Length: 337
Image 1 (cartoon, rainbow, N blue to C red):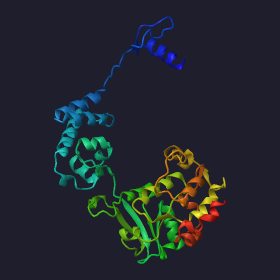
Image 2 (image 1 turned 90 degrees about the vertical axis):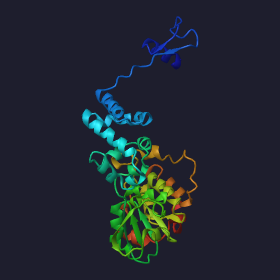
Image 3 (image 1 turned 60 degrees about the vertical axis):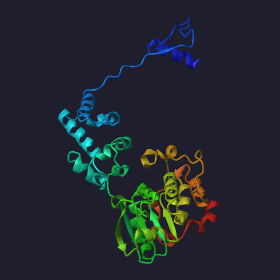
Image 4 (image 1 turned 90 degrees about the horizontal axis):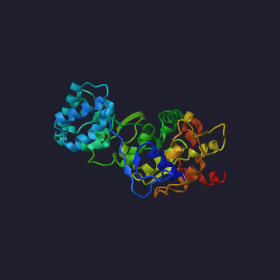
């Protein structure tokens, strides 16, 4: 019945044609579809003309035409300058783009560092440009700790990183922070690959102490992750585990699991708490188990399936007490809660 009514509505609107019966349904299975006329805006026409005038290869031009919405306030002359600059950049040798994306963009595309970051990945492919140019800014990593740390603790948020320093943990443990989900790009092993361009490698900034190089910190026998207790953090763990096989969840989660059981110390996945999209992006019950999941992660994911807690809620005394241990030390008691 729903399909029949939909067909009637399409027929009445003139979007499909057929020989109707008494109920305005098709007499046979043959339908004609009336495609809607596409009317291009003036800036879309101007951008297509600029690409053509710049002699952009037709396949690349068809993809770059999708940039038009970002050019609505650009004049035709500037569009032509941009199209010619993109055409010229497409033909440059690889060494011309062996630099940070913002630098390449500013030096070749009308003095703007932002243009390459506005291009989609298919647009970069069409221009034969490396995808790394899409990265808009340097990748900084904050680090603190002694020259011979007892363990390495990866921390999601810079405020929690500072809390760990205030706790005194960095006297014995190396702590590393890369600002939220930025931590997960370490899973691509950029830190370990000598063949990776120097412009793509994370830049280590020492906040306190004399910690060893990043490669050594991530290759340590004891490497733990401490992030928020939410579904996104579970995904960060999986992305890192491929490059850091010895990675374990931090024992600091021992303090956080009881929080999500208390409505006064936890929150739902809602807009106010900046977590509204996590339930749809990281469904905990529909995705196939990851090969990087372990018992600790399974327990934590179950704990934060409905409510979450942020790592900044943990007291500094607990950070100091638990920061050098893996969660497995205390997991049995938590599983029984």
